[in-house]
Length: 510
Image (cartoon, rainbow, N blue to C red):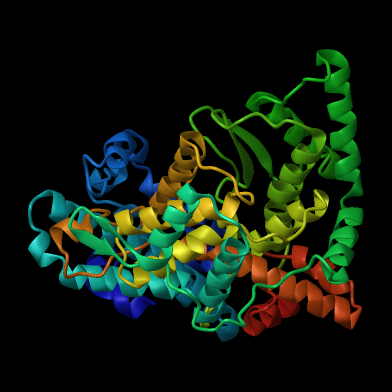
């Protein structure tokens, strides 16, 4: 990964291997704590943009593609302090860690974060050049960004893309369509014009037999889910008791506001950590929209702008997702002799990250709590397919146009007539999904540099990849009949399907 990142950004890294402090007095844990924010770097946090403000002009056709503005990109010496801190940590680890195996593990994780920051800096440079009228010089930078993106977050796997296309077309082809829906179907299958520009239709799968894994008739998901839920029965009982108290006080229509969500998480934390020795916190961020785990702060962050939670079951799934999975893996990882297992393990392997599996695990446990079927829908397939379509050359507008059409048809009932409300809802979802995979990149690249294939942000591939990996892992563990392997999933932030990561965790958690 670092080979693609090196040239420009290395000028910002520290050149001296020695810290001003006496290295002999430092410990690895202290070095890592000093750069914990950088080790928990999240690239998506740099891509806040004005997509909502540009939506109306895009939807009306006034603009062909949005030209998103990224306020973070305008900062002077953008992310240079983060680069310096991580580079210093890498140099200090090299100086004081005598165990070559351990040193290599630590270095791989640090270098991954450096490369991730380098990727974001490259996108910021492209954005700056385009907006200052210098788009003709971005070709090399675009290829650097593409290489880093694929090395950091991967590419769509052809067999999964085929399986997604089969899922979509099989679902649509099984329906009796109204005349209005048939028109959309013909466009989706055969292509359509946008002004004078012809857009190829959604392709058929090259492998008609490819299928996404289904667990509806497979006992392994239910078995794994039941086992893990039993391990968290205390959390579920607490949430349901507290919810009942709220209903008694406020009535059957009670919903939990963000501040009340914070209360539920604080009560769950007190249950698991009554003496407060873990260092975990619950933070309220009035300006945030999400409910998320922040490894740098070792905290669950409750966004003040998120929607209310409507029932006890939904509340428990969120507690299990953020605290039971993300938080518990962090707490246990920090207790080991290799504290990097608390912030997240990255290895020099074809897929380097721990997070793909972790997100899949949290998502599948939510499905287990709700006793949901493992239905594949545009909600959990769409981002993956968006990246694949862009990789095939479709720009933001084309991805959006194809997406809203298959989303409309996918959700229709037999013979259902189209209406404006139904179509507008799917167009809204298609726009948001397109923004997700193009965020950080020049979304109007087709206008400024039509010869350059569209750039994407591939991190969202992790959700479908992780879901598939966890489903297959559960099946294997069930076949082996070894429930202890489910307990091991929570001892650190790692991916047990990557042999090198599983071996590292075994060595440092004995």
